[in-house]
Structure formats: structure tokens, C-alpha cells
Length: 156
Image (tube, rainbow, N blue to C red; front, side, top):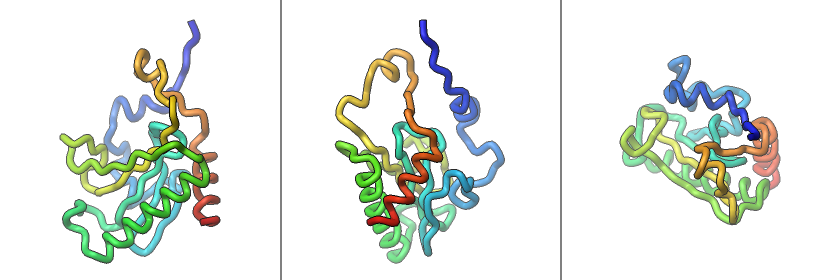
């Protein structure tokens, strides 16, 4: 039997909250950072569901969607739109899941900083690995995803 090793996922499995107590949006890892703007930040998901899985968040910590002011909301949605265009350019997906989880019970892994997930999807990208083995195969290093998305953002 073949084995697929993904040891980097164990950090998340054992402790889905931040290891160092720092908010990933307020103090992003340089290797995950896509772009910082006036009111928003774009980062890669460190534990992606698919290649190109990224997140867009307001810079302000501790607010939820219904607490953003109009300027923050405009910038947030503008950057979500730019992220969609960049993902389409970089990955040519058949679709993109866009979602917001607000609160632990809604599936939020980062509780105190509202963020929007963007997950590229392709026809047939669900296969036996996640269904039978509860394992997702990510076929690209995060740094490669970062470079592709940054390049695509500059080109749009």
C-alpha cells in the first residue's frame, strides 16, 4: 500500500488555533502574505483545501461582517473581486467557493478576525482520497501558489 505523508497538517490537526497566539491576519507570515492594502489583507491559507486557496480580510481586528464601516466593506469586496480575477488568471478553475465563517459554531478557525475564503474548484477535483482516507492532496507548494497569485494580481 502506498502512503501519502503530509506532516505539515499535524500542526493544524493537533492545534487549529494559532500556535504563537498571534492573529494570522494582524501578523501574517511573510511566506503566506499576498498583499496588504489600506483596509485589507490577502493571505494564502496555510492549510489549503485546494491549490490557490486564499483569504481576504479587513485589517481591523475583532470585527465581524456586520460591524464593518462602509469604507472597509467597499475595500473588502473590491479585494475579494480582485482575488477572484487573480485566481481565475492563475489557475483557470471551473468555479470558486467563496465563504465567510463567523463564529466557532459556523466553522471559523480564526475567531476574532473576520475573513473571506476563496477556494478554486475544478470538475472532478473531489476524488477517493478525501472521501476514503480523509486526506486532500495539494499538488503545489504554497510558495508556488503565492508567486502565481501575486503575478496574476499585477497583471489584472
